[in-house]
Length: 376
Image (cartoon, rainbow, N blue to C red; front, side, top):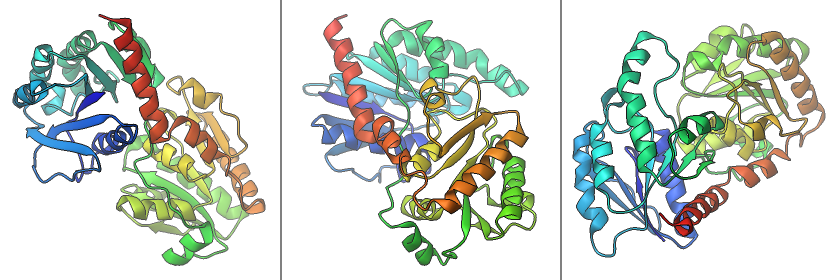
């Protein structure tokens, strides 16, 4: 198939959906499909192997998206246009009327990947205001598309309420390369103690990360295992340092993908007490699974069923509103990690079955072909 991917961002921008576009485009190309990425300026975008990248619009001005129409219809055209959708990817405050107008003029089938749908929850007041245009925009986009993919099950009901075609769960893959080193090799390269019990934290500085829970768990584990240290990647380090008391904290800040993977490889346990619960759209969790890293996280009604149902002693989910249970679960995982050097290795099998990019690309292609064969 000839597939066009439309996304507001692409590397070298620091953007999760842009990274998703990079990895999924390469996975589709490796399956033998012809892939073109339509993305925003600047023009000096990297060109993945066997993928054409065309920067042709302004991400903050959805009206500029009409520039893709002659490119879409040029020559033999495309079999599908896949829209990588987040309300804020194509216009300020998620207002993108030009996106809807452009898609209505596209003379090829449209599919959407929903990384988010519209402003939720209904607070603060800015979300209520933005929802006035984001919700009808979402409905229009769903009705234009012939099939849809969602990054988390929580959006399936929203999409299916308005969709004319099938809607399928498509979790995100890891935006990081797999580190080829052993844990001890990674620690040696980073100058970390070989005998340390290293707790890992990864992500943006955001209240959903529950850094006070991380600090409480780290202090409890440190009291039991004095060799405990915390390794932070991303912007969350300063918050974690303030919550961990006497537990040593390494704040390595924001880093390129290979450097992040190196640090994930050095960890013993990944702490992610998310206020909204774990889901298939959490790239940090997927990266931890990719590296076979034991995980202690939280579950909520938003959590995907396949994650709730996954059974592994190295994968612990506790209620999102119970800090005591989280700390107890984290301590149990830490004890197993100290006793068993290969604790959590089966998590890589789970990752490879449900989150590997070739698997996600195959799932997407299956959805497109099924829709295509079903006819108008």
